[in-house]
Image 1 (spheres, rainbow, N blue to C red):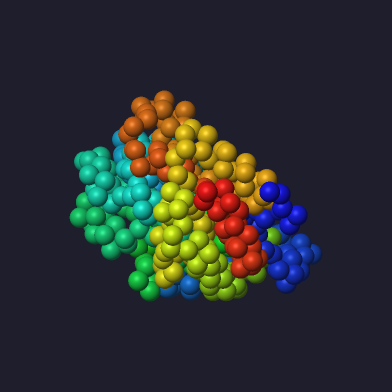
Image 2 (image 1 turned 90 degrees about the vertical axis):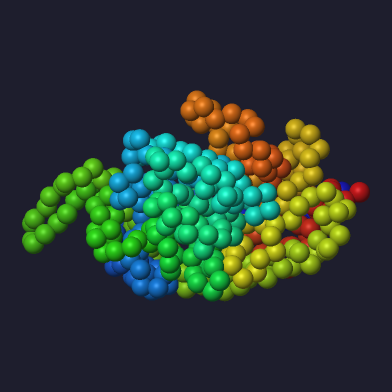
Amino acid sequence: MTSTLPFLPFSKPTIDEATIAAVGDVLRSGWITSGPKVQAFEALLSEYCGGRPVRTFNSGTCTMEIALRIAGIGPGDEVITTPISWVATSNVIIEVGATPVFADIDPVTRNIDLDKLEAAITPKTRAIIPVYLAGLPVDMDRLYAIADKHQLRVIEDAAQALGSSWNGKRIGAFGDFVSFSFQANKNITTGEGGALVLNSEAEAKLAEKYRLQGVTRSGVDGIDVDLVGGKYNMSDIMAAIGLGQFANIEAITAHRRALARHYFDQFGSDFEAASGAQLPVADFDNSNWHLFQIILPDLGPDTRANFMRQMAELNVGTGFHYAPIHLFTLYRERGFTEGMFPAAEKIGRLTVTLPMFYAMTLADVERAVAAVKSILVK
Ligand SMILES: *Cc1c(COP(=O)(O)O)cnc(C)c1O
């Protein structure tokens, strides 16, 4: 079976003409680095997050590194996270000199298992980095109860969760540090970029220093440097894209939820039994549906590669999010091996991401589901 329809990617950014024009305005303005557009974007994000301080950066990764530095986490400290995430989540722990500790995932939500997280706490544990995979939060009440009980900082890796909520409260509007990413595939993009929600103006001032070489300015020509910062600022070019994207956040989230619902309708209630595959949690209240992921039935070591190849032949793009972090060489060198986190290892091998993006139509969903069924349902 071959398809004559154009290739359907698993993700694709949508940048409207007004946003493209706004970028042109910035380029013509004479001020293209951090300036009024960055300030306007930060103000809107702060308003969205219940008035909490928000600062923007040139990646989601550096926001987490900076949050760890603001929390004073470094050598000798342990930070607990999930093995199923983009590797940035645990690389930042190593970057600040701390020790990454993993807790296995819940095979249903595919997020960190909070019982296992609590069991992994030691006297050296200082922080937790939960990840809201595909935009589905963990049990936020339980997460913060654990953090309070053990006096731990939380750096929420909400890279995929802008637009998600927990029992009616927006992710970002409560909690400790909350990190968002605006990388090209995220629900809202600035090309590359990120934002960090902080707890106080004092933390925000510190974030500004870490963002730009540790510099503090005062008066007309006063300048001092009292810590080692990096070069992590967002430009006005990026912020102009972010402003254009953010204006559509409600419509983007609503459309993704509608696409997800249509996926479930099209797969139907007998799909899991007929195929041996596993659908995601059918949550239409909390998740922003950043990704739509199914777990394939295990047909041996080449299961996913074969499936992805067959989907590509049907002109439907797929991805995988993610390979288990603890099995990468960098982490094996730190003592992690196969068998330590069985749920993560199974899902890391069999998870596959189906198309999900704002410009996608219900007909595209039907096409993707028909392709999956033609491969998995005999
Ligand atoms: C995208 C992503 C990141 C990294 O964000 P960048 O902006 O690419 O640095 C971190 N964690 C998760 C879960 C992500 O999806």
